[in-house]
Length: 211
Image (cartoon, rainbow, N blue to C red; front, side, top):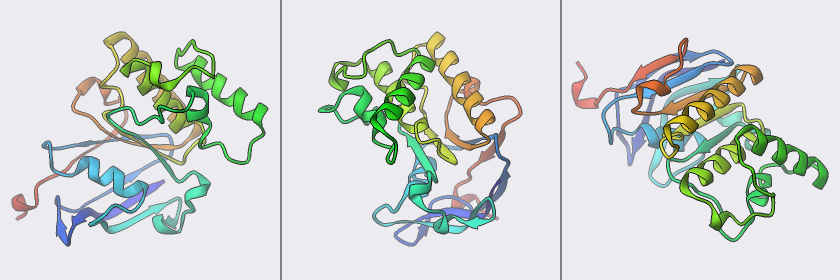
């Protein structure tokens, strides 16, 4: 379970949105809502790791442990950004395998192949990342985030680059993965169809609206 108490984000000591408290059970998806520019994506980034001038305000606990005490190498969190963030000089297989430290080459290859099959990526693992379309690159980025089986999956408009039919299929696959692995997903989206039935919603409010 992910437990947030009085959670907000500070930029240079200033709160970006009103603090909120929420609980997200294993296997659930939390959708963050609110006006554009309020700090939703910044919150996701701050959960991944330190950002210049940005800090978390409040308490975050994951399965009873304080967020800062959960080792990063234990697969604490993986993030899928709104725009593809692949390394263009690497193959698509090498991009996904970056988070699979400690596995043999064969085990990495099997894991990457499994994810590509799941996401409908019909390419050899040595296919250059620079040769992908934007939608294909987004699917490879999703595969890279899922590969180490993170405890928390962070999605920043992760499905926005996909065409409607592919978007639905990939979104359903990702949410099924979250449920089956009992991980936790936090997503930012402005598309109503991306909010799963039975998920949790949290609307972030401007600090100026307090009181």
